[in-house]
Image (cartoon, rainbow, N blue to C red; front, side, top):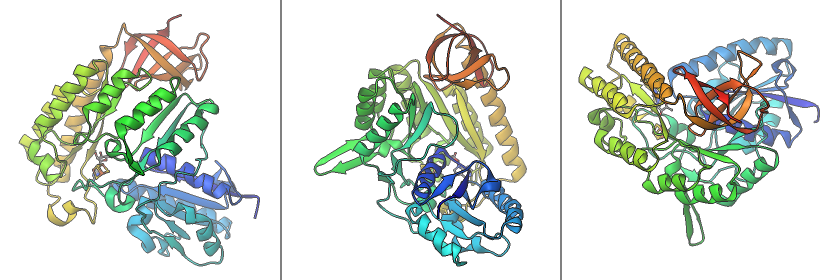
Length: 442
Ligand code: 5AD
Ligand code: SF4
């Protein structure tokens, strides 16, 4: 029973990173030590993502590679967990892929049992989606060597059904985690020396935890946490433009320990595309939110996700995205071309009819524009002094440290007397489109 070990490889979003830590904790309880050496593992789990076809293809490739390890160790168990498990289910037992265990995002408590079933040479599967599971009582096993910044998931699932998106189908209905258990988890992190937490949810603005007659909404939760942990920097993601209320921005303004950063994915700058995407806001409403945000919090950095080449996207609609990007001036954006996902509303009702070469050209235009905007935005920080949380050594130069400022921008500077885990003041002296470069201010 003892002396077994599990190796977990994580694909996709930050929620998956956190889920892998929950899985490591559940398996630890039944005697599986966590290993970072795949060749030592008795159990290999791939925690997977279905958001784009490309993400799934990477996992298929990886499963084929892992097959070689099994030929060296016939007792090795291989599991696919997460969104692909939920979407593809028993297709993953295909002879060619050789998964032994398939577990969806809401069935991780069942993993010890699934392992036992698989050990008896039976295919073990659980893809049941729950309306209540939040893993609230499980203290995640923190993986990796960053002991400074951690994710804390506050809700699971999504009810938005953006027409292009698979997440509501793979992660199920939205549910909020017990506020007390969130605070408990942050308390534990603080005691272990963590200095930053990022509250995670597919749409944190619709957080609502009800106990008896009281409901805690997201603004209230954020305020409670900010008050209780004045020495922890608090971040949150993702915000949905349709639900992002002014109350949250006012809470941020009241508490300096809440990061001056909002990830507010726009997806498209065209109202007609947004309507086909079922995003439930217009270009104008989005821009009004941005204006209000900047009015209340002038120092805020704003980041986004942008999706091009969606069904029927015309050149004019694409141009609307480029002009919105210029108007907002995002500090950073994650940019994608549309990938049709079977089972979504779009896959049933809206043709994936923008030719691949047009998608690529539009994506390149978006990337080129964003690079130049990021460069300008970062150059505007030259001369400013930021409080930076030191996270580690810079990759390029061991005499330099890297960290992030309140705006979530990466800052590199000569180390001086600063140590990992310190909050230090850094004056920015130079910048690129991706980083700020500076010097310590004593
Ligand atoms: N194709 C491409 N990108 C997608 N995203 C979500 N679904 C798809 C899809 N089918 C992007 C959105 C979302 C981010 C997490 O991934 O921009 O905000
Ligand atoms: Fe997908 Fe939309 Fe939910 Fe985000 S809000 S996970 S894009 S359905």
